[in-house]
Image 1 (spheres, rainbow, N blue to C red):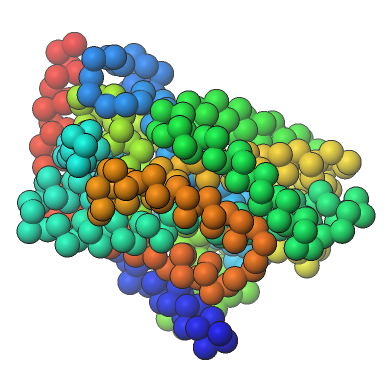
Image 2 (image 1 turned 90 degrees about the horizontal axis):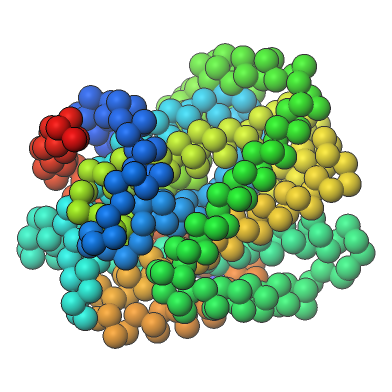
Amino acid sequence: MEFLDNLFSEFASLVWGLPLLILLTGGGLYLLMYSQFLPFRFIGHAIQVLRGKYDNPNDPGEITHFQALTTALSATVGMGNIAGVAVAIAIGGPGAVFWMWVSAIIGMATKFFTSSLAVMYRGKDSEGQLQGGPMYFIVEGLGKKWKPLAAMFSVFGLVGALPIFNVNQLTQAINDILLAPNNIEVGFSSSLIIGLILVGITSVVVLGGIDRISKTASRLVPSMVALYFVLVLIILAVNIHEVPKYIGMIFSNAFTAQNFKGDNFLGGALGGLILLGIRRAAFSNEAGIGTAPMAHGAAKTAEPIREGLVAMLGPAIDTLLVCTLTALAILVTGVWETSDANGVSLTASAFGHSIPGVGKYLLLLCIFVFSISSLFSYSYYGTKCMSFLFGADKKHYYNYIYIASIILGATTSLNMMINLIDGFFALMAIPTMLATLIMAPRVLARVKVYVAKIKKE
């Protein structure tokens, strides 16, 4: 077991290493330059689309632009934004935040291209239903000879979408923030009860399919982001005198790596800091992994570029907004320098420091909703992969495996399983990014047609 544990740990570190980050960041940077910074030129138009200005109920697809974005966000806004940012600051100091921002800006271009392709090249499953996602745009866009690459994505997705890591972290947060401080015994029994509650809530939603998942996500995600925003504003107001100092440190430390405590990369602390920030942002907003295009591919639209513009707002909300809120809360309260806590416990210390009494519990509410909504979206991604590989009539079997894995995630701390899933999740980026880079010129040709069309309207 120890050998397997070490093997899977090495596997996850290897997969999330430099080659993948070059593919995600280098590929995304190429797409950003190639599109002549399109995400920023059309951000106003993207917001109009999101608000429903161009919605047409007769367009092909299952869900609205807004529901597609909130479904995708419900998967990305989670423990990565709350625990992942804390880890980045604990290791890299304030400078890590700057490199997370850089990664998010690049990620906006990646999301635009992958999600545009998800609508441009929708395919039909074995039941004749219209479907989108990397596995479909690979086959429909590049041809049947590329099907092994699409199958590779789907196999990686079956494992990568399992919720063991998310559930494990959520259970730990409930035990540490809610149960243990109130003298409630924490152990296998408490974790099993949490797991069963999560199974009950998840089952009701996921067995209803994408329609119920999208409707639930579109109600939960905006309200929780708003609550989180208000809570951090309170923290910033309490520590207002510290805000200018730390905003300055985010920029200055980004190039000096003054507070960096991690592994040096290529012999330098700055290289290690850049790698840390990019990796944390990639893990948080998932740009280039291929999950979001599966949600955006279900959007009711006949205009692929329109959906791509909506999708690009994802990393802006996920990383530029939610991750920045977490970072500022941790920095201005000073807990990153005075506390030994890490991950979600560090974020909880920041909330408890500035909002005594209720701060930790309100944070826990946000964590709970963010994590629960992630469970809904990932089940959908897994069933899409199952449907592609084995037929649409078999996809419901995935939900049973998925629900069973929630109990496993809540009651065990299997690093081996978490590392395996983490590694497979990262591998999804290889087929997604390769196909996207090959077909990028087609997206840009479609952009020119779309821009000419909206100028006439």
